[in-house]
Image (cartoon, rainbow, N blue to C red; front, side):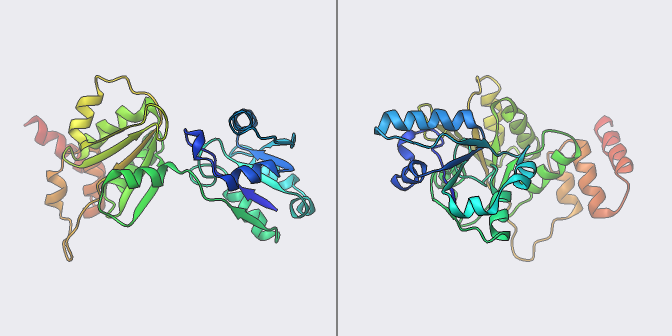
Length: 275
């Protein structure tokens, strides 16, 4: 049987007794990073005076999952207690594990998922946004057209969008948010459950101005107030033209709405700026 075990995202006390029992009974550990899992087990052993007898550890992550799945033995998974853990938080949520679950389904292997710590849900509950639904986008692509298209999808979402962001790219994201809509409310959560947990909730423009002079550290969850569109309301060309967007992004949006060439619209926008 396979058991997916969530691990703390910072505070060791967030591990459940059920998760600890699963770790104790493991006969094979599949890990996003074996070094991280071994260190975590050592900390649990010291903190809770526990013994984890299993000494079999295999890596299973985004870069080797297909190769690993091809070597796995179905009988072994059915007869042994196999535990999968990612580095922190819930497996399969912006972490490896989904392909392993699907492999179990296809091969009739029993599996279970233990509830536990998750940065997305924790931040959503802390944000104060009055919503019952959200869309999780994970990490945005780093650059290029793929990032632009994903960014526009986030900003035009009518369902509360949630992102993860690393410390060295947070300022870039805040700059993009402020350029798109400086008055959009943004909630930021830093280092959830850890010693330096901090949250911010201001407009995109205010946050960008503040963070330009701050030393940004830690992992971040970013929650953006969704677009509110009244029933029957339609976004017009004039609405797009009035947005505080970089000319290239505005040209692409207008091209999609009008069917005209992006280059033609982009040049028109530049001419307006220069005139």
